[in-house]
Image (cartoon, rainbow, N blue to C red; front, side, top):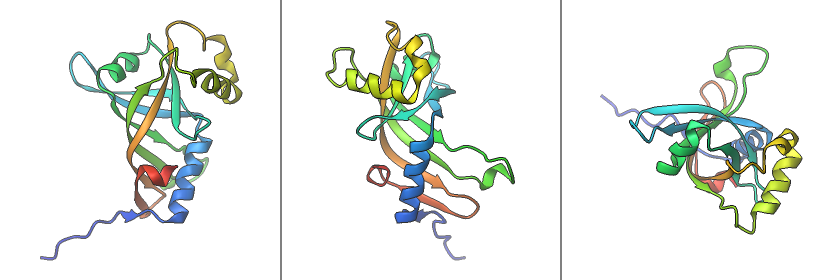
Length: 162
């Protein structure tokens, strides 16, 4: 019996471009996290965007269950990519990213620029961005998998996403 080769390819320039386009176009994402009380997995829909340095970021309230979860267990995963109007949903591209969450402290010098950039892309957040329970969270990628559609998958490094 022959050993099966890995069906997932290394990223090429077209895959890197597609992954970057998915990230740039995502206004929200699915976020997986681990419950700090019982260790079970959870998933949340989050507002999502890219920071001025093109790093991945969200703005999250301490009232959300993933706030405490990310503080306790910063390892997480994010998925971006939306299903189009036609065809099988599994044929549409999506990007899954293994990441580590890092909260941006209120006194961080970059917070003002991050806030201004976030509001340009998420103007409705002006209503709550300065509430005491909200924090910016950066996602530092560890690895990623681009499913570019049927029979087209690529393993990606953090450098491929930058």
